[in-house]
Image (tube, rainbow, N blue to C red; front, side):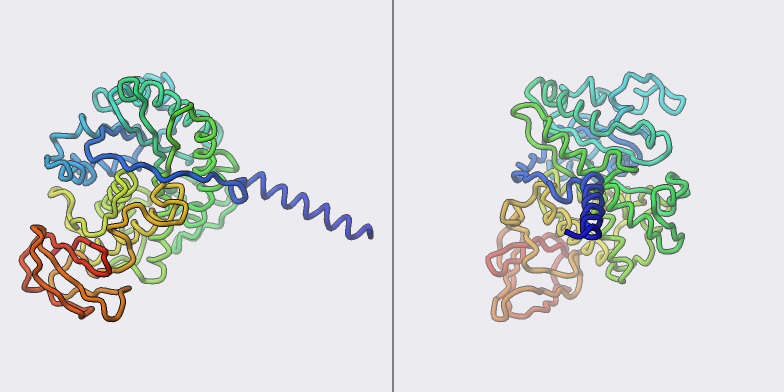
Length: 413
């Protein structure tokens, strides 16, 4: 073999080795079984930081009200008992595990709801959702994400749910849009910042999933490591893919697919923290992944204290989130054939807009297939072969659309 060919092969060997070290999950990934959906009355604790807080604000929060409604209750009745919050602003996972007494010059426990310490009160909870914070120079130096997720998984399985064991889910989030809040210098992480297009933000969404910060941590690495090391009998750690939700939203905004939204600042007004629209997205993706249910057809106002979401935007968000979550194996919503568990609400046919108050369009159905619309009581009120249907005379409420032996909720407002 010629010397030049040997040099060529050696060079490519080292390049390939570097790729495998930096991105191990590109080649090696776990095959997870479908996650068993949680019941609507499961006692769940959410441990995180300010990108977990949108679940709970404005008080008691859109997610809390959505879960409460599913249980025939009001949000205030379940907040603190069925849903707990353990948020430390800006905290990384290590801070929740450690015995540090103060955070941001306040007692750490003052940030937790009563009986919601994620380490010491886990016996009172049946499910815990945790997250990490990969941002900022302190976490860059001290981050030990895999170690502390491992610790929480073992402790939660050993002591959670009165000693019967509780599973953990991993909520993945996003960086700041332009680097002014945290990642003060995107170039240090290998990305060229653009304050108009937020290209570095978009690149980081992918990088933090596979590689973390400078090769430390990373959502997939955290999940894989926790699942390899989880105690015997413990269920796998599944992901609630907030980073992928934001990536899809960013991509769709860029090409004009998102109704009423032309800029990411319309959902992240300070560059990182979501407004009521972003909180609606956060709430729906937690609902989808925890309960294994499609959000398509849910209300465009989950909480009377939050502004109403534009109906077209709400319909887009609902369909987008179901599409993202149900096609991501690490969320556990798909089986080995890639079929979504919640078959009754598959996206095989589409109703748009939904919610609606005038015309609905039905697509992805066979040409001669009839569509039936039922009241929530089961009464058939319309049967048609048309793919555009006028519902302006329908009373407000929830309806069921049936076509091709599939069902979807339709909300008339």
